[in-house]
Length: 203
Ligand code: ZN
Image (cartoon, rainbow, N blue to C red; front, top):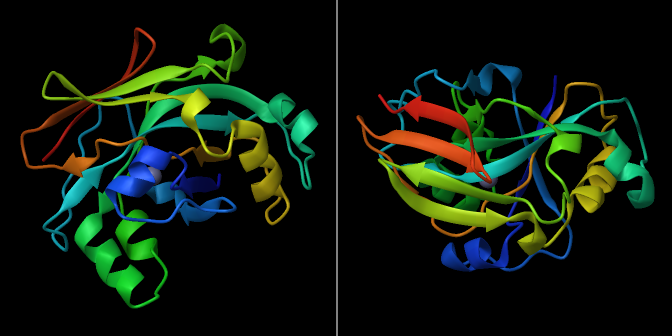
């Protein structure tokens, strides 16, 4: 399984981190060992003093493909869920400043929370999917797939022109504004519409 992530896919989030709006998708990856599932705890790593949550829609690839045309890309999505792209923001800032890869800040153990899957046919129009991140009972991020700079089809087509997509691969599709720091004892939850798909306790 490969895990792809798209950075800066919402204008409001790119602005909150003072990043330019990208002309093409910003892509990075996480290793399979980064995954935690609904109900598992998230452990703040020792090497960071500023770990952020980034609540995101995740799509799961349902068939193999390479150089997928945008008009066929929707056929490659098999399921969707809410996930969290945990980010060691202090380390990422250091790596960005030094023009180094982001892997250490984005791919550490536990950095990819994955909610329970919804079949893609069950969610209606994929370009109107509402989701939210809830921290300690309070909604901190609201997103909708209609606010993405690059829609699902564009992301799939773009990524598949570099990497063969395989059944089970995941694509984190970017976070809206409202990211923030975590501390031990926090509880993070995620919803698509009114469906509660992820809960993780921060330790
Ligand atoms: Zn992200």
